[in-house]
Picture 1 (cartoon, rainbow, N blue to C red):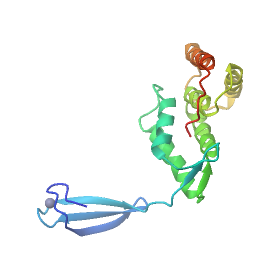
Picture 2 (picture 1 turned 45 degrees about the vertical axis):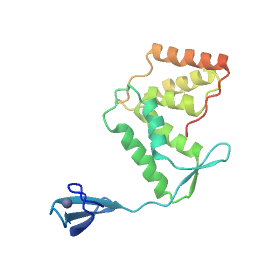
Picture 3 (picture 1 turned 180 degrees about the vertical axis):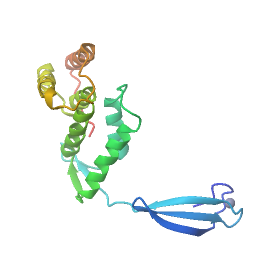
Length: 186
Ligand SMILES: [Zn+2]
């Protein structure tokens, strides 16, 4: 760790304490005397995701984050909601202590949380992730959500302005016509 002020490579540790599962060290540069702080975290053991076609890929937090961000685009969610959601999932995955996780399990974890958070984000994520074969399957999912309306919390954002569904519909139709297969992103 080089000094952030002068770039010198040696420093001394003047204080060291545990913080949030890692170690926080207060350091002083031996050249310019500036003080700065470093946080050290134990690198968790690698976690591999097993995809539908049985390929293995190292778990990629950024990829998961990007997929969920996309689903939550322009939804009125408080700042930090998506990061927190990914933090939760990541923590749960590592705490589970398994070296390999099927991508379907991660997808379900995301959907379960999005369902509680925002129905539109949920539908968007599910339509990519589950590769809804046609509009009927998608409609069934929406109907299930609607009929479960009584169980949802009062803080739940209102479900589907119709134009939103229209967008999903026409995109789907275009995809179908073009015979483009939409791959799951998890
Ligand atoms: Zn320095």
